Structure formats: structure tokens, C-alpha cells
Length: 207
Ligand SMILES: [Zn+2]
Image 1: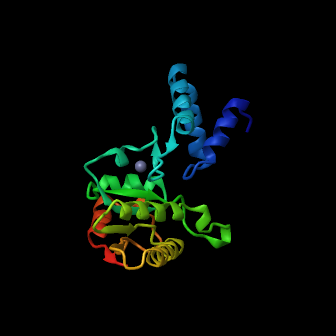
Image 2: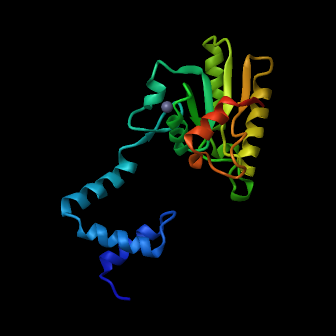
Image 3: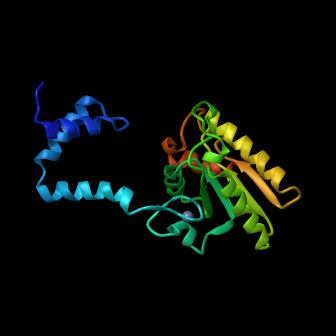
């Protein structure tokens, strides 16, 4: 099948996205072509903005428009309750439940030796620094909620982090908990419905 090269390029680009097969990519490309030029320009600008207009929050590493994200900036949230998640998408999933009033720490992935991802490739030391800072500020008790996905790598990462925290801060008032019990094994937080997710948050256990 011959198509004009600009159309073929967009089809190819869309097809590289998760969950989009060749037929959907084709349909979307032609749909975009039919839209008024200013609307297409806006979509293109918005996509570009994903990269050019965002930074990592300097506290929690969530996606942010400014140095501190809106969650870290919110003084109504409990800074002694920190939930560790894999990706910014997990922050969105948890925020949708409306049941978590602490702060987050985005690891940037999970430990995966096969792919060469060790603790240095994630924000593990940054998490330890945050805990240290919190202790120095005289926090009476800190809870770290490990909310990595219930996959093999997610579990391994949670176990690793718990060990790291226990070894780094012996005798300190730090409680480590784990959510994701009740979430289907191997599933991602992002696919859990808000109800299941908030239940698994409420039912978190000391880890
Ligand atoms: Zn933040």
C-alpha cells in the first residue's frame, strides 16, 4: 500500500506507542490529517511540551512544571508519611483515590539486574537522604509506604528498600509498610481501580 510519506511517518510513530496497532495508527493518522491545521499544531505543541515544559520535582521526582511539584508544595499534606512508587503514573493512580495525604517518592523504576538496573540507577539514596532530613527536623515518627507494583521486581525492590532503611537508621522511629496486598499479583498500580487501590492502602501492613 502506497501512502504519502508524511502520513506514513505519523502512522509509524503512532504505531510505536503502547496499545496502538497498525489499524488504529492508520485511523488516527487520517483523523489528524482531517483536523484544522491550528488544532493539529496545538496537539503537536502539547506533545512537545511534555518534554520542554516539565522537570523532575526536586523533592519527590514527580513530573512538575516548577522546582517543587504541587503535592510537595501543599502544606496540608503530612511530610512524615512518604509513599514510594515506581513511576509518576503511579502518583496519579494513588491521587485518584483521594485517600492518601502524605508525600511521594518516585523511584524511577524497579531493581532489575537483567536490564542492568541497580540501586544506583534508581532514586534509592535520595530516599535515604529525605528520611535523614526528616529525622533531623525532629519528626517524631516516619512512615514509609512501599508501593512498588506487586510484580517480582516490585517485590524485590520493596524488600531491598526495607533492608536499606533498617540498616541505615537502626533504632529510629521509622515504620515501613507495604501496600499492594489484595492487588492481583503481577498487575500494575496504574491499572487498579481507585476502590481496590484505596483498600490496599488502608490494609497496608508493617513490612
Ligand atoms: Zn514533589
